[in-house]
Amino acid sequence: MAKGPGAVGGHGQEKLGWEFFGSELKRKREAAGLTQQGLGSRVFCSGSYIGQLETAVRKPQLDLAQRIDAELGTDGFFERMCRKLIDSSSCEHYFRPVAYLEGIASEIHVYAPMYVPGLLQTEAYARAVFKGGFPLAPNEDIESWVASRLERRSIIAQSTRPLLWNVIDENVIRRPIGGAAVMREQLDYLASLARDERIVLQVLPYSSGAPALSGMLKLMTFDDAPPIAYSEGAMSGSLMDEPVRVARLQLAYDFARAAALPRDASLAFIESAAEEYADDN
Image (cartoon, rainbow, N blue to C red; front, side, top):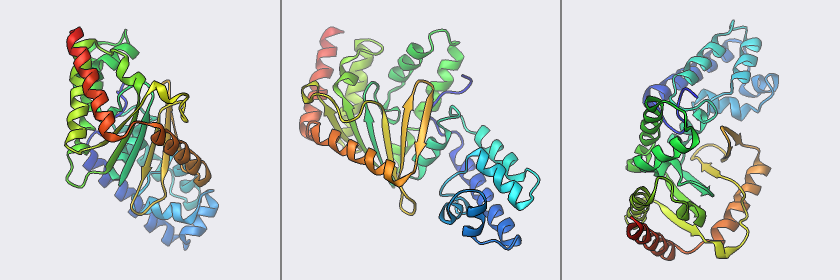
């Protein structure tokens, strides 16, 4: 693993790159006398999706860029540009599209069964997560991944920030990642974000029984594009935009949210756990 997951590296420059990709796609498509729907049907996607690529609302997968080159006769131009823009990100390859989409989402809803969501992690907690996951990694790699993860937190500070709604399992709070002092700092940080209404935070307690979701889930909505779901496993992730599947995942998330503690009770739960870690320390 050469790059840490969960970061936006050079986000402004990367966004401009995808806007150029989109403008060139539109120019080449029109030069070929094709409508968005016409090109979409040839490369196995919808015309609206081609429109989203042209306006940089979404980024293409590499295989789609290759099909576009084949249909437009552009001699690998879009494939090469796609590779260059993807490689310019500081994220692990499977997370790079997610990091980009986080930056343009209007709402981000997360269910976290094991770790504090990456956007909300403190430096010490993130370091402990990476050291636990990659115990033999060189320190310089660990520090690079931590820096990349912390960079993503800029989303929270934006004046036009997305709505961040987080449902975290009680397991996230009870597992002492990094030790008592690290957990106290992390929970204090979560509590401060919730008190300042920077985020919406709910705790799903053990007493709620079996959760409606069995793994990490992120749901993102956009002002001018359909919603997307993202789930993550061991060193892998899956982006889903099929409407039926996204709707089913949204329903499962709604059930988990309904079973979670209300916001005030969740804040009290987190503050109490933070005090317990302080006593342990």
